Length: 592
Ligand code: PEP
Ligand code: MG
Image 1 (cartoon, rainbow, N blue to C red):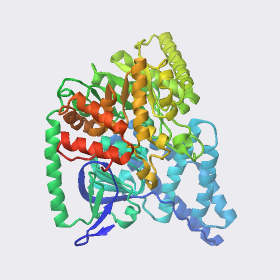
Image 2 (image 1 turned 30 degrees about the vertical axis):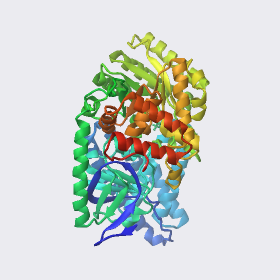
Image 3 (image 1 turned 120 degrees about the vertical axis):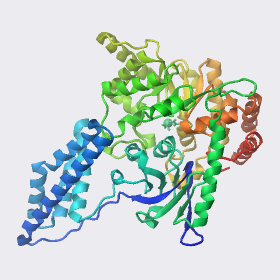
Image 4 (image 1 turned 45 degrees about the vertical axis):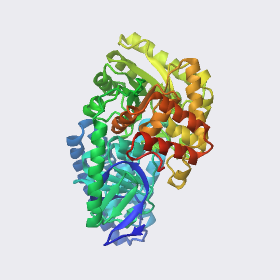
């Protein structure tokens, strides 16, 4: 933190999503509650029970209010999640066990309730049944509310943000981001996080300025404090002075003018001055508006992260998924849509009860295709839903986190089974639907020539490829400085994948965040990407740069970068390229 004029304090973090936002802070922290422990005399027990009943009643009222709000804002279906919470509150066994525990232990009701609810949570979480495991999550949520009411505390919840705020969090999970009311979030500041954590990617996709990795920021801020977020260079100002507000007002206008220049080419082809084109596609999570899908200037969807639909606590069934996939395929038609099968796990864990245990290394754990190949019913529900959507427009299917040919073969067997099941049901689908895989694990990068025999296309996931190649957890801000796309190892791996694809005549696209950065986009194009899939908000600026260069410029950049000996030299090459061909400075994946 650096003191500035007036009461203003300046903090530096990682610039995670571009833009400038200013507004009152909304501090959202999920701390472990401190549960008091004290003896209760027998004559006080009646009052303890009365306190418990009042807390249960207050919780019921809160939940029915939230249910009504969610129903109005989203849908009856989303709201029905809270019916399960009501059932927990009405569970006589839980209530009676709590009272018995208090009488037996002679300790206060908070302590008794914590003991009993933890016993219930553990019992449910350890049963090998998805539905029952979800009940553990319900009990955890409801218990926290009851406990807050017993303690007379208010748990600031994201659902209570009634006017637009800058959201200040310790860490934001993708499920928190999925449930955000996007009209109420001006900007986000987070103590933890990194540029490629999924909640940050989601923030970028909804165009909310975001700065992450400012240790302890949330403990410096009070609800309502004015905060300014500069997502271009990672600065956050607490109590910004009038001078700063004026300065940032000007920056905002400059950025808007630059954006206007970018937007002017949005609907023109992504073609170099000598006529070589690259297809620019969209990365989506299924929650985008029709406007974003159809007016971004993209030529289809290169990555639909379908797990976005699975993060709100309940897995959608085949029909529910089909409706979403079909709508998007129809909206994008005649352009293609690549649906990536479920990539749950890592930092996209809807609730820990999914696994029944906490993983020590979730990014190297039970994630994506590994989960799907063991939960074949969940996987086949999804494959059938995707296949059915393919009857409504050009659709492709992509497997995430592939590390061997055997995994692709196993997934393709299930795909054939799903096709046969649909045929028996007389349902329509595209029998020639193309399936391909993500190249995001080093072992897959090395065997792209072998994988090519089982795949119609590859898409490079640079977010994971970098983390796995460099052994740098992509969401750990303590080591984010080691997450280095400019490491020559990364450049060589990318080049190797493009070359293998070329030799085997399998098209290679890129859908990791590198593709959303204009200069990296040019570099990937120069290396051989036939298609780049990006955030909708980056389409215009990537097009703008591509339309100002020749293909030879892109090839030359790739050639020089591949000959460079280290990250500094590569950064210098990229910086010079940007200066020469763009003349405008704008945010980049690395602060060059
Ligand atoms: C990637 O890893 O680059 C990618 C696109 O997938 P995700 O970010 O969803 O892991
Ligand atoms: Mg990935």
